Length: 124
Image (cartoon, rainbow, N blue to C red; front, side, top):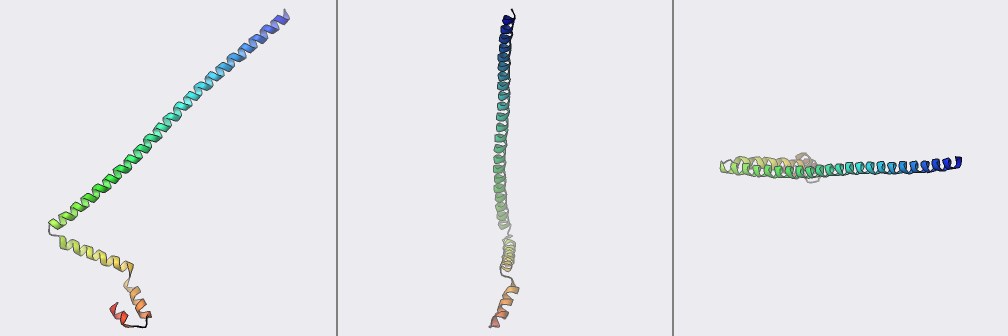
């Protein structure tokens, strides 16, 4: 009787362990599903953010293009209103300032002074 009881207890123990193992596998599977869902959700959100970022970049490019169009319209308005002289004057001043930045008068005079031909100082 005692031997039969031990066999029965051993069988019950094996059945219990198998049941626990199945339960553990079921829980792991469920956890894996939850993790996969969360990962896919994050990937969708990141893809959406990337799309939004590229769309905002395209919008910025469109705004820049529209700003350029407005500038061209403003210039046309200047010419239409007879303000072309004023614009030319402004452009000329800009060109003079740019030329001075590239080759300042002081530098030209210094170079001329250092050269043997003193006449360059007068032309500078």
